[in-house]
Amino acid sequence: MEYRRGVQAYRQTDLQTMGKEKLIVLLYQKMLEHFAEAAAVAGTQRQEMARRLGLAQRIVTELRGALDHAVGGEIADNLAALYDYVFKEILQMQLDADPAHAANCRQVLLPLLEAWRSIPAGSGDRELQSRSQLGTEAADDKSSGEPADAQPARCVSISA
Image (tube, rainbow, N blue to C red; front, side, top):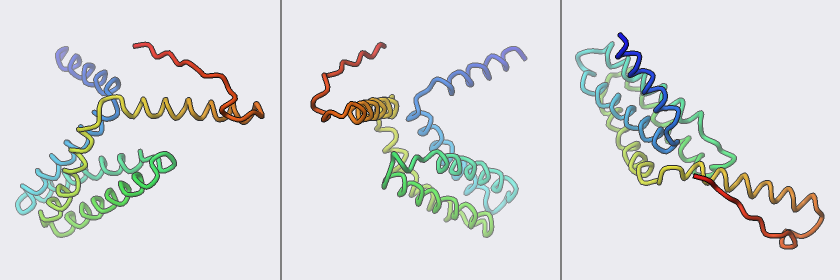
């Protein structure tokens, strides 16, 4: 029993401290695993298929809800459209139990998974920090009444 609590605590800490890129990769991997399992049992175990599709549906819903359209622009819009497609395929598979819907989802999600895997860890956090600093500098420039190039250069120290 103690071992089990220790493993759960470790997993919780790992999830809380991992980078956003790694978390998204794990979500994609898990969703693809659910599609594979749902397709494998589609003709024989409808209840298990529905359970797996429900888990995949929860993941795609979370991914879609996490999109920031103000920052992501066209990329976020395109991802939202892909997530909508995946969601509709899940619903259709729930109705007709055709594993082709899971294959369609895998075909859409595998290139996205590979793209997320290629992003260096911490890139999202660094980009947000950079945008935040630029936003602060732009606000400072506007409030001073001077052109942006009249402001002294700023040094930013990032500690490891």
